[in-house]
Image (cartoon, rainbow, N blue to C red; front, side, top):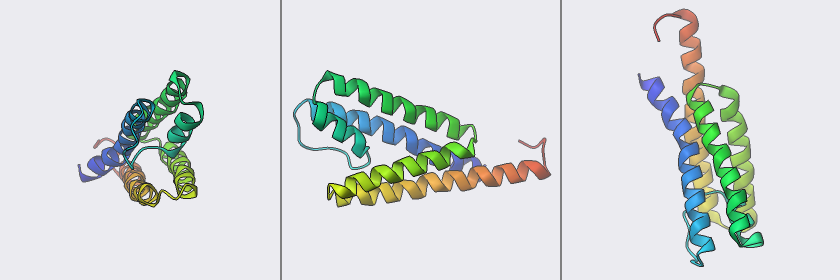
Length: 135
């Protein structure tokens, strides 16, 4: 049960990042200057460059992909954890380029959370090899 909980927690990071990134986009496009540090840097760049309803369409595509990542991760597709960590790590570099150190620090924190989900998923797979009918 503990491994399942850690798996779900790690996969849940994708949902949090998706939701807060979308919220950040709505806040930015409404003219406010504050944001949540857990969100994606790429959606903030899209919003700043395009700055209209068109940006929200691109943001929705990115957010939808994160929801798919979360769903696949919850279903123990280990590769999606890895792909998600690589992409979120690249996004972390993007926010670092813009000197957003707080957001970069939170990217690192979230990556550790996602990694915890990957480790739990791998351990569950190993456990099932030895006790196939238990889960």
